[in-house]
Length: 254
Image 1 (cartoon, rainbow, N blue to C red):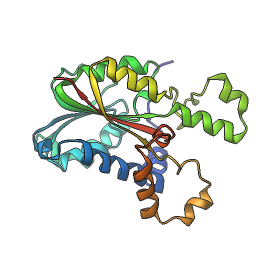
Image 2 (cartoon, one colour):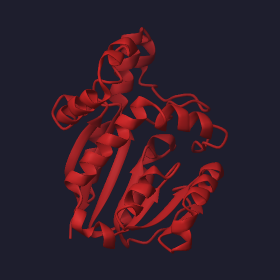
Image 3 (cartoon, rainbow, N blue to C red):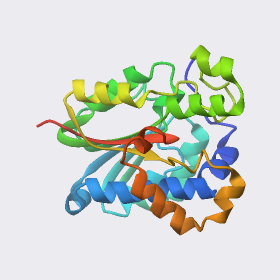
Image 4 (cartoon, rainbow, N blue to C red):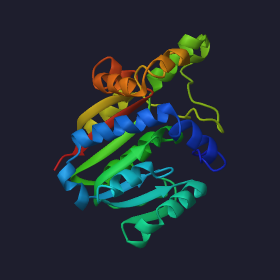
């Protein structure tokens, strides 16, 4: 059936994921964890691949730290948005923008850091793509990988009364929606990274309780307090296994 392309969903995607409180929380956590685990002093000399980079939020994060970035996405609408929004960086030679899928991409293993957030779960064969991403990291380089958590999705089904769907193991979303077609088991992802010669520096749940709490409860919380609590819990078990997403920061052996 092929991988999912967000052409036609870009406005909904932007509003529900990036312009919401949960989107801000996601970016706050990524920022805090990347600053903790990546070598800040080396960022300005890094060459970064932003795979399936969407609307370019992470490309922007790297560009503000002086990195050079190669961005690609399968969605022509998202690529055009990034090309427009970051035209100055493109003109300066600090950002390249391409429209392609991860299965078409042929990037050599020259990257100091490969970034792939919310990409694998939209693919028919996520582990084939992950192997490609891992091979694009040069020895001693880093991989920043965020995946949609299969366990949290199953838990949500159990909590909402769709017991048969939860126990069937068929948890993938319908095409055209915002539930991924291939949610991943974080334990399997971690094992795959380790078997491929990567040391996992960080495994963190992104929104460990915020996506389980009722909306009215979340409205009681100050956004800053909510972020502080999520950050305090995100690397602890069992909370790191309960996030809507699981973020891995890993380093390839030299």
